[in-house]
Length: 318
Image 1 (cartoon, rainbow, N blue to C red):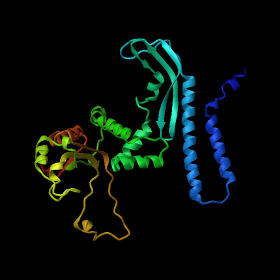
Image 2 (cartoon, one colour):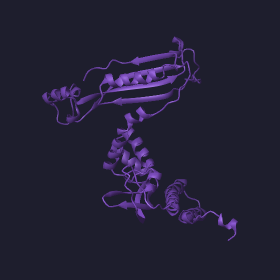
Image 3 (tube, rainbow, N blue to C red):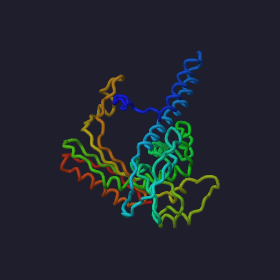
Image 4 (cartoon, rainbow, N blue to C red):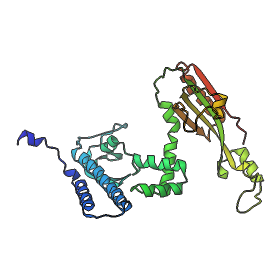
């Protein structure tokens, strides 16, 4: 065979995606004048399917090119030499579900290993990193029910409420460990290093309150059946200690600038952006632990900064 022909890339794995793209182009060429919202919605829906087929084609190509080994092993040093071809699993992506085909290595009295899963960094469950990032970002700003509705409107990869709660808990559990293992490059600067602290009361279920608050909550009696009356919420919250640390260029202000006496109406004064911001809070740890952790991180940069400013608000007991 001619060597030049042997180096031609194989695009057969993306043939379904190519047909989808051709169908979309033909559809757009054939339709006449219609409301742009209808066309926009068609492109959005069909485009998601196109992206799903592209991802599926990529995974199929990886499965075709996967190298077969005589045996594989993990930390237990037990070789798995029984190779199974065509083992599959489902991956729910932002564009919809796709199938991951790979080689499986097994052995008696040992769990099976799938090297391609490790190379792709797939999770034990079926949800991709994109779905995790999207659903966790939605949960931060809204309730779980609203987050699921928003996810269904914008993504083809569906997820249930119970799964969304579990994913959020898994992501939150890595928070402390992530910051303990991370490495940050030094920043030689004379800008201000700001440390800010505050407390935030969070309404909890009775079993989630601290012991002293639980005792007070049991003694209190509700005056109304439908809602809490004024003064009844104090024994239903748990105080979370919040801390923030960031770097910012000094922004001196005058009395005239605060009262907007020296600014024109159509001019917005530039405020220097903050850098290296970290915000963290905890319901489980005590305020002393959170504040100590923030100062520890501040002292980590002590040799990098000349000025440190601390802003703290008084935290009331629960």
